[in-house]
Amino acid sequence: MLRALGRIILLPIAFVLAAAVTLFVIFSLGQERVVQTLSARSGEIPFDAIFDIVAKALRFATVYTLVPALLLIIVGEAARIRSAPYYIVGGGIALAVVPLLVGVGQATTAPEFSAVAWQVLGTAGFAGGFVYWLLAGRTA
Image 1 (tube, rainbow, N blue to C red):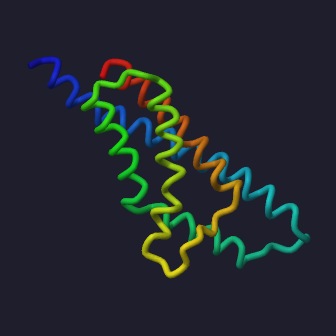
Image 2 (image 1 turned 90 degrees about the horizontal axis):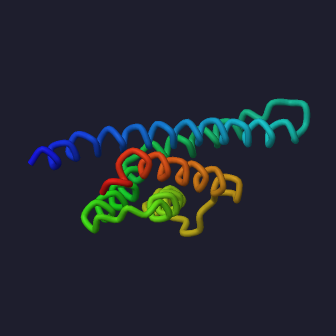
């Protein structure tokens, strides 16, 4: 009984900390990539590109970002999976699927994200999956 109560308390805390690490990686790597892309262009500031980037970032702030990660955690906890590769690779895949889920309700079927965006999302998902495994996944 006490172990179950401990898991009920630990899982949301671990999920929130893993999400915080994921957001940190997205913002730090994303900012680096945006600066590299904007500095490679001419000397003027491309405001249309900046607004496009902000619009894409706001589309990520939806429920679609939580659902794949929550499914990964629910399956891992129900099956008592303690494997680090499950959470690390699963976290990367769960976050890399987000652009496809965001584009589900739109008229275009092909994702409009560059390879750099996929790299940033995958790396952030790997980091978040590792943090979750470190805090709660090892003792599933």
